[in-house]
Image 1: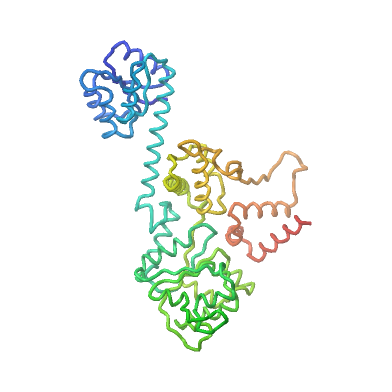
Image 2: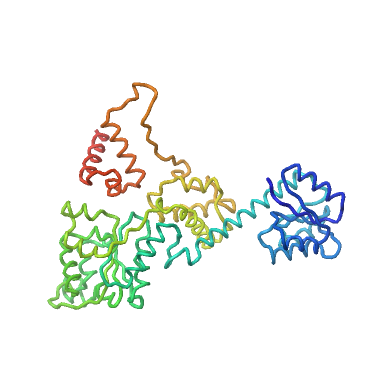
Length: 455
């Protein structure tokens, strides 16, 4: 394994045997006879594991384990104890030793213990690296990630935060658009004011106008008293209109007027009320297409889209995926009281391979489930949902060895378009841009493919 082992043993015969036997198994072995000599050597050299006898001249193996736990906690200590001294072995573990092995022992038993200790050390080092990736310089107002895509997002948020212009946040479902809105608010001059959020898709069209603008007493059957709307509640702060693409058409001109005039008219009232609020809208919809299809007013689109903040999909964030995964493992392990500390390499590879159409939200849910299910201290492949553990990326095969495999151009185009849409997580706008195809043309082709499939 090329791992470096420090043996602390005052019996020359046992030391020679360990040096030879472990050397044959790929370990690089150094030896010292006392705790003081071992500590002196470790002051200038690094070892993967320390193997120490319990009984040594001067300080014993328990003292060494205690010193290592305090000064070198990343280096595991394996204590060799006499047969039957279980109380002493337990004392060694309590002192900080990783494990113990009793005399007499087989070299293979020690080898397995050392390999487990080395894996344990590697895991701790990886956790430290991932935690460093989550430190403030790699995070921003509660958002995690230090990759290029997120750094660009952080920079954009910092530059637009103090402007009072309307903001449109776009991105796929689960990318964290609300977190972005909160970051903009927290960085703005309005941070001491409220941040009020409303999901336009979660409230019935009949109630949404009253929810936004408020209503006067007697405006409708259940209006037994005057009620201020969310515009009024967000006074001096920020109003987040989530899922703005679901806003009913008949309500859109009223929102446009509120944005342009900085006033609102509560339902059932003739009074205009001035509002002091910054509006941030968010959507996973293609609003430009909605405008073309007359499902969203063009003038409202340009009013809310003064400052545009696109949020990258998880598949576009590179190494951030594993930093986020470790973050969620630690978060859910703490919440559930589970001793789960990380993810095995095999499970990590499955996470990296998967397309994550649900983005960060799907990753968080996946790892919450895995932490709850796992029987180990690290997430394994079997703990992942079947659609992730068995996922295979799509591949285009454009060549073959038989004339019968030559396909019509139309069929090749069909396969390529469907593959592109899948790889881009179903984002048709992005697919049209990458393919160089007009969005309407792409939609027509996809509709035709779907109709052919059903037929």
